[in-house]
Picture (cartoon, one colour):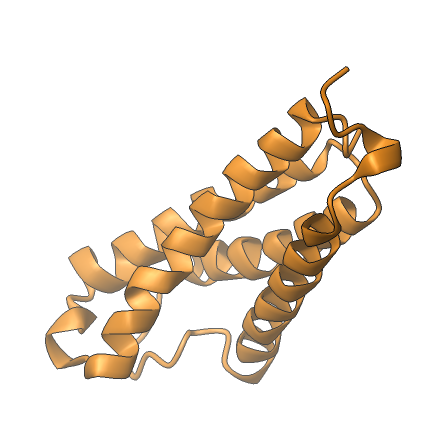
Length: 132
């Protein structure tokens, strides 16, 4: 076992997991309010599905982290895949980045960065025996 086992889990695990759950909860709310992600033109079903997988997978993955379940890694990896597919549609196919302002561009960077972080963090938590 590592230095910090499940009995001596660092307090930051709970804070990071809870904050990321709130972050993904905001994504779920955005999806429920507008499943097309704010697009004004027709969005393909696969892009809307990717958005759903990204936000619902992220929220479920964070819940699984808080429940200390190692399956969180796989759910968060699926969420990351949803983010990648959705971003591909938004920036490559729909070319929506051309009309984005500073807020939208910062979100375009933060969303995949946080998704990648969560996949890494869940694997790191498993390696430290914080989740099993």
